[in-house]
Amino acid sequence: MQVTTGTVIGGKVVVEGVPLVEGSVVAVLSREPEEPFALSSEDEDDLLAAMAEIERGEFVSADKLLESLRKYG
Image 1 (tube, rainbow, N blue to C red):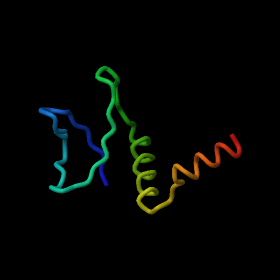
Image 2: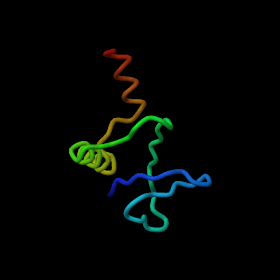
Image 3: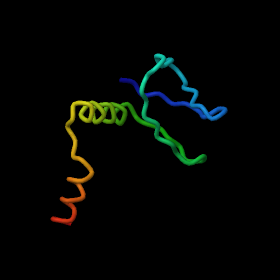
Image 4: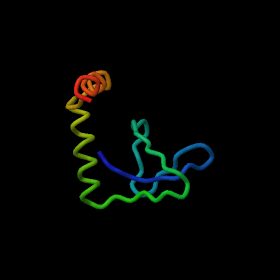
């Protein structure tokens, strides 16, 4: 897994740095035009670790989260 940035050009995301393999599945986080987006190496490591947990199925579903919030909220 890798983290990269890009820019929307002609309605498509053009990534910077390492090219992605054709057919790669990606997640896109969008920010407001004037809102900066930067990660420290520690934040990037945390994000990659969290994404790996999700890929392993180690997460709480939205339904269970909402149920918990209603119960304990």
